[in-house]
Length: 227
Image (cartoon, rainbow, N blue to C red):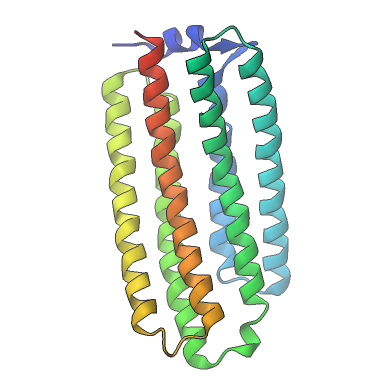
């Protein structure tokens, strides 16, 4: 089996292996997901603070991405491998970009809660309950992403990828159930709330899709450097 140290020796850019550095995104993404969960039930002042904190995490990820892309493109590696490494950086960065987008949408709709009747507030609570379930699953998926980055064997990597795929399927079920509920009640739900919740659940699903794409890219890169 391929040893992680072997991979890191091949992928050295500067003083650290690129794949090893990728793990720096995981705590940022997990922190952002946790703060989004808090935003779902937070009061105005706390919600605004959480939104600002997620923005700060997104900026950290941007800075990390710029640094890593500079290292990758200045390293002595093949163009094919370089392209995949850059795509991997962008996929990790998408996790934080998506999280910040989600936090802003929650902040915007929550500012208008006073305009909604009891039924609409119940719809929002239902939608946010499903959103919280997805975010909890995304935290598990991120743990598996970190494990993939640190994998020492292909078998181990395969197991982690399968775990992410299974989590993504669970999220698909939650998403479909929420969308069915929203469409079945669309005549009674204000347009802005309908659009907010349908967009939100798709964006949350994208976070799981990104985790799956990341695992696929890491597998592709690992195969490429061991041929």
